[in-house]
Image (cartoon, rainbow, N blue to C red):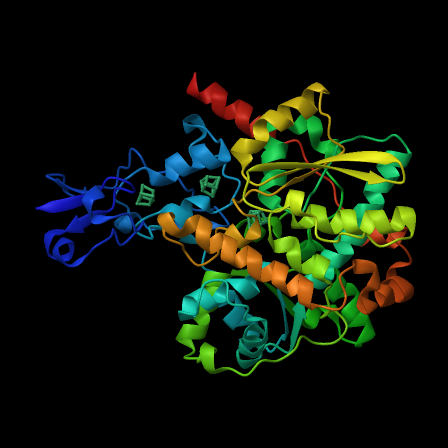
Length: 480
Ligand code: SF4
Ligand code: SF4
Ligand code: SF4
């Protein structure tokens, strides 16, 4: 006799069923696990599972582990609004299907061999860590959810042999300097509005496939990791007299889509993306006792980020950071209430009005593609009331990325809120809360970039987008 979870469809053997109180995959109570005569199909034909192509740069599917429960297809439809017909071919690489696969048949693409190869080749290894990694990696080592492990994270990377460890919050600050100035320029010159944030590669790819009409509305800023790669290869190398070809850059991220993003021809500088789960696996393989590590600090030059950069990992964080900076640029004053509660929290669509020098700015924050659709339709039809919109693909923002440690379905909201809170707490604790106050940001503009939106900035820190709607048209044609 077998048992099947009625929530996530995980199959459970009788012996295991006797011992458990909750579903081992989604955590739902035992009474929701039902007797079934079904056997796990020993077949390679999957009717319900999402199709993941072998060349998907972000996701891997292990067929032997798949029980064809259909959870991945359901999530892709419910969260990404990517309908059955597209079944994996239009994947935006977000990894949300991984998060809910009950058997780990879906996993982030494993690229750790590339790290070992670079080490063997005696490359200068440079790591940079995304904001949300410091509040999630501890889950893999049984620390309390949301524990802030920045110091141990840095030490663990040094133990692995990285020569330099930098902080992506530095590049988040750089993004805000560029993006806030871009927003102000668009408003002053009556250019295309609303402006969308651009730091989520899944959202950008979604727009390229499903909403090519609004590509001019997306900020031209590269994502923080896109900027970080360029800055390391072009600025850090110059300052330290290192040949940039000797440097191997590794972004440590919560995000499976970043593995796709660094392969885009417009984006350079980052050689490898490792997700939080991959990093944890490497640390376990290397028998590094993460919990006992002493704290250490990021390296000089690209290692300082403001509180505004830290909250990038949360839904609403990019918006809040950009508003802080735009307000300062336009008024010369710092915001009185720096914490912008109306764009915080887990509501899927949040909106706010901000008065800057008599101009009212309408903003919206969305963190699930399916919730973005009505707003995207309004922008496409020219009826949107907004000036500035933040879209992040994952529920909760990057703290909920597809490369993060897995969370039981029943605990999703609670765990994500703990990670979010931990980043807001850090923002409160640091002395520097505005990007323009970050001394490393001041330095890079003085020594290298000139000013936000300068020719140098545009060359290295900005990008362009492609209409990829043909992919959808071709699929629709095939299906008729
Ligand atoms: S890949 Fe995972 S979620 Fe998808 S059908 Fe298979 S077991 Fe279910
Ligand atoms: S990675 Fe995202 S878009 Fe791709 S199949 Fe999974 S849920 Fe769908
Ligand atoms: S929200 Fe963050 S983690 Fe999720 S796809 Fe976008 S950038 Fe990646």
